[in-house]
Length: 179
Image 1 (cartoon, rainbow, N blue to C red):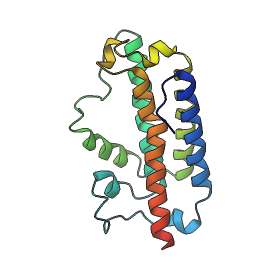
Image 2 (image 1 turned 90 degrees about the vertical axis):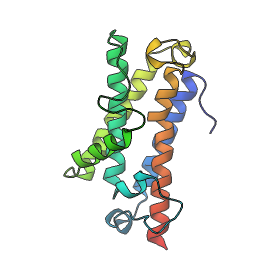
Image 3 (image 1 turned 45 degrees about the vertical axis):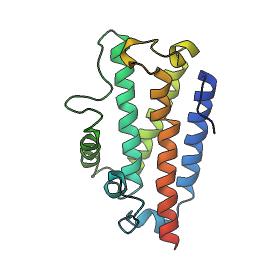
């Protein structure tokens, strides 16, 4: 699917990828759900997230927390606060540490709760996107608080692209467990 360039395309991409993610989750076997993620023997999977996330819940709460960041980013900046996307003390060089904090925060959460949280935050993302015009979403520098980018790029990152990331991880896990 090409990168969205309009509000309609963004809404479609977010909804379609979320549906695909849920379809993949619904198709996971008990063995796939019960087997911890382990990509330690794959030389191509050296990014931190491959070792961090141990199960489906970890992936879902990661998606949920990044959507919460987006919700906060939009709410506070549209109210005039001028805050960065990542909360202090994190920045784009240290956000991996934030991801570990997210992981630690949710270790006692049941999978069903993680699914419900993500479902709610996904609906909130669609609602937020729906409140902006094409220009507000895709015109570069429309909002000074997005820097040289556009707001739509942030929404793509926390919805359709992030759902792609999750599906890639789940697909790799399913393949490994099935092998």
